[in-house]
Length: 318
Image 1: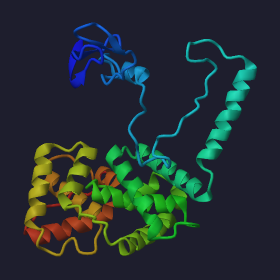
Image 2: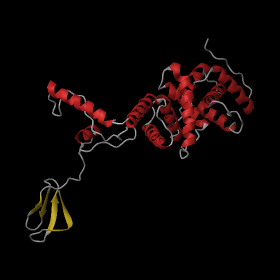
Image 3: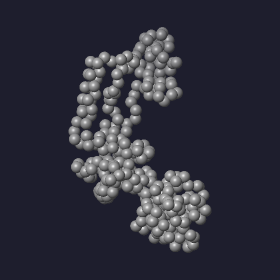
Image 4: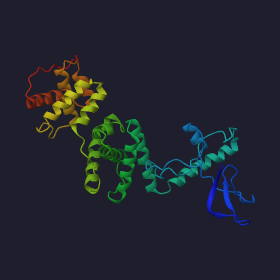
């Protein structure tokens, strides 16, 4: 494979030069003199169609990421008993590699600030994986926390609470329906969820007030209804009717000062009753994170606004 190089001529006969990519040489098209024998290969890393093979044969590193404190560009020394050719490493060399790996980790987080950043970002990654959040949410949360440095003093604050507040803000920016209590439930023990949620809510309000440039779009009621419908595997026609009822009652003050999860669960339950579907209040309440009494109270308010008269079936939990 040869390409003609424009604007270059042979130093001997002034003929046109061509580059031989396969052999890595630049030769003269007239006299055949090899002008250069070490040219750079600007072609693809590998011709393999398999992604794993491409990554194994690639000379360059992966993409940078904000979810790691060093942006993912630091050399990693893996834990392995074999070298690159598959041969077993003797005990002395393995001990040396272990010491190098320890010092590499210490050098990566040399200052307390970097150590705190690494701990928070690691906790964010674990939480997003546990909650099945997308990579976009993780990257957004990492960028938000990095921007906190110039606005809020995060030193001494709870890693769990500041992580929950940051992920909650990232979910709002990415229009992902997640409550702050749900995020705290996935990051801390059950006995500490209530107290950690209150502290995370305080951190979130501080972040919103101090970081004025952060834009958090309001998550509509339709997204809450769709989320609960997907989690309870509700039929499409029930979800559509619930969305229709929510649209017709949006001008009322039914949602003022109330948890959106409870109202969305009530919309779905009312729609299921109207269509004759056997949906239990117990199942809807467990998914929405509210009590059955809350769903019944919200149903009464919805029926008052919608001017319908139906008999609400009690929960079949007995």
